[in-house]
Length: 227
Image (cartoon, rainbow, N blue to C red):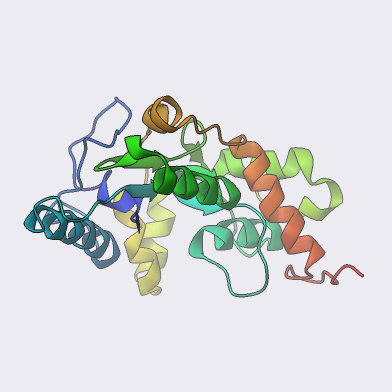
């Protein structure tokens, strides 16, 4: 069982309007492919090559999650969670033209278990995604609609691309997102549903569960940990 990533599937391609599937592979030498995406792709390729060399002595199934959201356990959390935290804190002035796949961490765990115990998963990859990709603005609007007063700082206006490009001149970390501005991507969980009977909760519920846990644990600006 290997936890890979959508990073090994949906990057380095020419623009496509069809959803990405498990048959797709990131081109590690493609335009705009950064070190993280390249490393995820090469690591998964290496795992499949290793299994092939073993000549059937070992089995492998791979789960490829998109952005993993859902309840956090403490202050040590992933980059995906940072998206919600920064929106809730109002620490970003607006929403870059970025799109994300969303899945709840509890559903990712469930898919792993299914892939480990179901013989049909042998030799297969499974995309872990709940519905279509969401723009950052759509994520912000879900927070506004469902988090009430806690979402008072969430910005919903879309930032122009040129503003991010200028900001990237001073903040090198922004350079990683510049190639993805305005790109429309999507992916499908049809295979995981069909082969393993996986049914994830909605992407909106995953986003809200993230925000609720950040509030409860006192991890937002001016918030207090719930008793």
